[in-house]
Length: 253
Image (tube, rainbow, N blue to C red; front, side, top):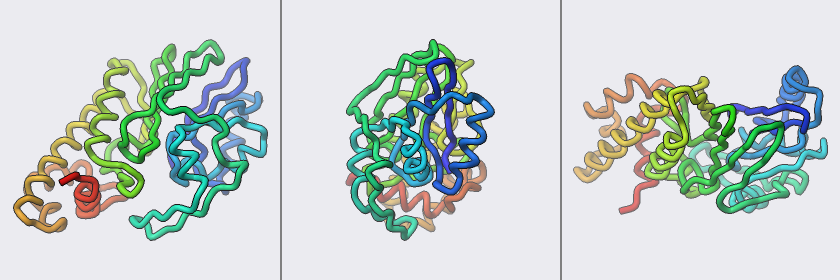
């Protein structure tokens, strides 16, 4: 599942994402080690089930669920993720965000300023990044996969240009000391996010050029430009030719 973020203190707990429903007891046990205060707020960085799967369980605790308005509207009806041949049923009412925003939201909790920003459609059309201003920590949701090719949900508004924009927005908030929590992969920093952004630009340009020459995704994935990237980024859960297909799927014209 996706990486979870937790901020705890006198004002209770602010949590980011909650993985899958069967993992809720484990997650709550880990949270209790940090603080025994209640989880007051849960922010979903986007609608995918590996980030919202625990919403029903967490919602039953009386937690207020917050997300971008597109997250609520997507979760409220059945969805199909063709890339994974998976139908995701509509979420029950208790699992839906009860507070939604369309641009930014700011929480003032535990002496921390938590700024939530909706970014242009990147991984989905409802992505948020979360900036803990005083702690100098940014949670990127799935706009950053640290160390491997990202899945981009083209069916739900995602595209590689948006991923590049989202990375640039995050980089604009970061300095060399910033801890950057990716949606998937190990804890990152500005240098690693910069490398990810540069890879996305190189991959986009290589795919665009080869596609114009009429090459198939398999041929593009084994081109010399992509081979260099594959060595570093192609060992995650997406095979290079699948990543190429996704990049192509999100390209306009």
